Length: 379
Ligand code: B12
Ligand code: SF4
Ligand code: SF4
Image 1 (cartoon, protein in one colour):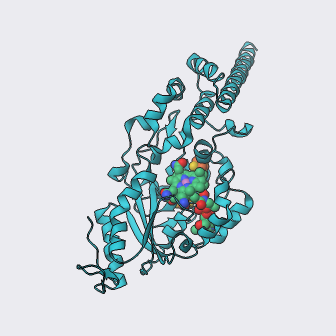
Image 2: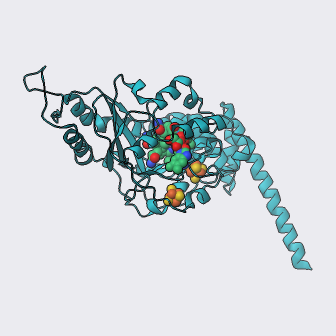
């Protein structure tokens, strides 16, 4: 049971009536303290529940088609709600924005690696539970409250930036001076009128390290992510056939991609420690594509259900594993791909067939190069 924190509209102990014990500023301070000290948020702040910063940039991105196959981003009712969060909760006045760190071990390169945020329990389930005491405290203070974690049409990064949790990095993610960007965002939308915090200064300066680190050109300009070129989109959201050029882009990432964040000087110097509720599982940092293709469906499901990885489902995971094996030397990859080439799922089978053909092409090119070399040596 979470005690009410008092507030302009808080209920008296004997029920019903409201009493005015705190100013809005005091109530806001107490709610933020609960989020930080009680719940372990790395950063917390308050934004007005109104049109988010740079909403026009979101519309412009939709006009360009940057959302690729994520048609849900462009649905009219979802756009309306993104422009006006009060459509998500009648009478909403404020957003309490929270950021939680996840564990961020140093970069390494392995075939089958998984983005850091996805190596533990699914944040869509963890964060709403974590925020429950804060929701109860808001309600006990007389406000209606709705918890949002990627679960509603809300421009979470823009509101977090407005609430002063950090600034929007050129990779489009929320970035904090001390915590970097390995953060997950969650909000409480409430009818309480709480004083908004001030945005913080942008500290990207002239740096462009994230843009340069992106291997596919998805970050062709600051603040713009072209989903159709982003490995995160291709491995998580896009579970169908992939167009020919993008099949060549898979060498290490099985699920998600952290390269633009790994390159960021602010994120590199942040602590590696995350919130305990988001602790990573040792068996999820890297999933060997051979092992993945060799696992029975039920074994795979049991291992990954309840983690973000399961969003890609059997189809997405096996398809991407096939594409990764196109670049893996050795006969084991040939055998696994030959088996996958007859998979009942046509998307998986097509990826395996493409990977086998790509391996044959690479082998031919290599033997051609070797012949060419021996010719040179003979001269
Ligand atoms: C769709 C989506 C994706 C898509 C599209 C990503 C994108 N950048 O839009 C894909 C699948 C590619 C994706 C990937 C990832 N995602 Co994602 N994603 C979302 C989701 C659901 C919606 C984002 C959205 O609306 N995008 C639409 C585009 C157009 O919006 P936008 O880029 O934010 O637009 C803003 C910028 O363009 C900016 N802008 C434009 N011009 C300018 C100019 C200046 C000067 C400035 C300052 C800003 C600016 O203003 C626009 C409006 O705010 C959010 C959750 C949510 N509900 O918000 C999570 C979210 C953004 N994702 C998250 C994560 C963790 C990731 C990954 C890191 C996962 C991974 N490791 O693989 C990658 C990162 C890739 C990247 N560089 O963005 C976290 C980010 C946390 C953080 N620190 O910010 C979020 C917030 C989820 C959460 N609840 O924590 N994601
Ligand atoms: S997540 Fe990877 S592919 Fe996507 S923008 Fe960042 S570096 Fe590029
Ligand atoms: S890598 Fe540089 S430009 Fe990109 S988000 Fe970090 S500081 Fe900003």
